[in-house]
Length: 226
Length: 244
Image 1 (cartoon, helix red, strand yellow):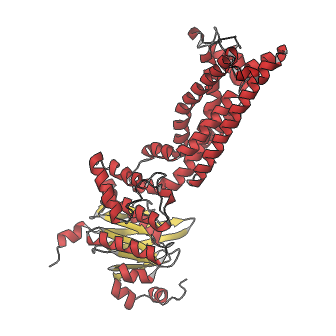
Image 2 (cartoon, chains in turn cyan, brown):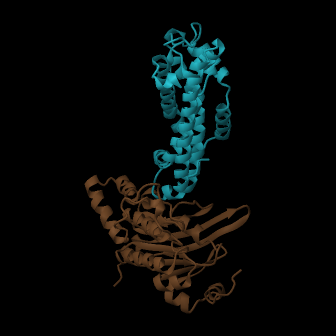
């Protein structure tokens, strides 16, 4: 607790980097996942069900495997090796984007599909095409979608397997809360590990509290988070 | 003397329309012409095809066979743009009362300054002034339906379809909505409305389409259909008897 209360510089640098990486990853995932999820909710084409099943399956993809695949892509001999991103925060953001995008896309699809069902006839009556209905549905599902973002953030900030593979846990460069906890515990430095653990739990509780509040509000607005 | 050109131009007709699902005929209307000024009320028991016919007229459902025509031309996007519909359960956007109206006005390309005054006008028309910023989802059933009607009227439609808009409302709320409908009709909006409430048909209708089992069993002036129905099905329905 002393480490937290005394504002230990190293500890807070790790916390800040963790937040930066995960927030960036969630924002990028939202930019990809929300339109994809919404498009899957309103579009009708052959293979749509297969894509939905695949997207849902990707939600449970093992983080270490994602880390391995991103590592292979970014390593010197990989297709993106020339970018020299391995062992940088950018590589960690990429890995988290791969993990979080399916979550946001799948939750968006569920929420938007439910709303689209309700709005369908009304929007068609008002002359709104399927494509034009996407921004309308995304905006009207905004409360439920914020909970999807928070769920994605929860997954990103608590993730360890993928970021340790592509980030390398380099001090002052790619060391985030989860990887530091793993390292410091193995070294026997339980004080730092526990301090970071407490902060991580605090973040998890805060995120869940926000999800609950927003879900309740969304339910009151008539759109329950699926 | 009646202006035949005007009557012809506002003729909404159905020709040879059939809808069949799983081998069951849900709608079978060889011919129906709505060429009077209205309001036209479509009356009949549950499952008689009233709502289906309304959706066909509005182009929300495409029939398996036959055509809906406006001005003698197959219903197209231009025609649909001059129609609006209000549903039994009002579907309101999860936004404020004003934002629900702003949505359709903005889509019509109305500039922001004009939209503000038009919204105020519409809300006054529906007795919803003072609820501008309130969430549309928190309105009472009657208020929500009034907002849905105002949003439809904001489109400035030639034809307004209403699918049992008062079926879940108390007499006061029903009366307010009937007044709105009559005012719109007086302003020249053709009203085509589904109901199973004979009293409502008597209060509002200029002409009545009576339906049963997916068929139009009678169409004529309201007084004639209500007071001297020609078909047995209409007679039984109006007498309150069971129609099978």
